[in-house]
Image (cartoon, rainbow, N blue to C red; front, side, top):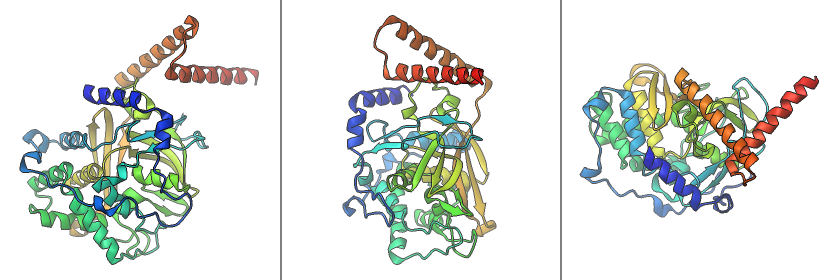
Length: 391
């Protein structure tokens, strides 16, 4: 935890917002059509892990899915993106889940480093995102090229520590084949195997979870931050604000800047179709998300309460079909409600923040960026209260 804080703090001083915006990946189209081919195809190789680099689950982890999920979070640390260095988000104004309207005039993502999509697993994941029909009920046609992209992605992620760990975990519990070739085939069937959602062969687990679908004017799935970034850059995604409270406030890191959030619950429109509440990770690697959802789905329960770093989450996964024909229907994180102790901590932190801002204002010293933001929020609340009194 302390190491992560220091890493974020260093990043904050290294890259300012203007530099970050200049680093946005410029090859994403602003209009419709298929996405470009992305970074050079030379980035399609992952150095095989040495035996000493493969982390196997301990007895304690094997006895607890929550402990196994926490280990996956730790294994992703060297591949998880760093706020202000690899990407920057702007959560803007929050709202309650029942509130409608646009509470965020600006985009969610302010920048993504061009180097991110040069990483082999990110590049392979990116290449899968334009392989699907958006509308549920429209049958998918999988080309030979797309089949090869699916296989390449699975081969690449299977050379990473999170997926090696996931395989060992599920194989120990006799949920998947022990041999790697058999596990890869199982992964391909579960994630890329087509099934009926509205009509024959119109959907798959990968499409629903990572890409998203539309049915009857509503968005389903779409729980991946990179897909959100790409669709926002293309002008098809309209961010409407985050759902209060922030996830890290439920986990205890109440004083961290909002730009550090790596689990967010948001509201958005995708091509003018709404999704009022949706939770996604931010900056996590494709191999982590695939490993996390695969482990939870493979272990058989639809819901697991876990703690991933500072975040208290519920990982949910549901199947379509039964028995040996069951495939991944959906999988996603969900933020757990605050406990009474966490709520008390949040109130105390807010009181300290307001008090520090008031002292800074009365001292005549220049306010920090955070203090200016808090002062503006307090002034806005006062104006709102005054307007209510007039009415």
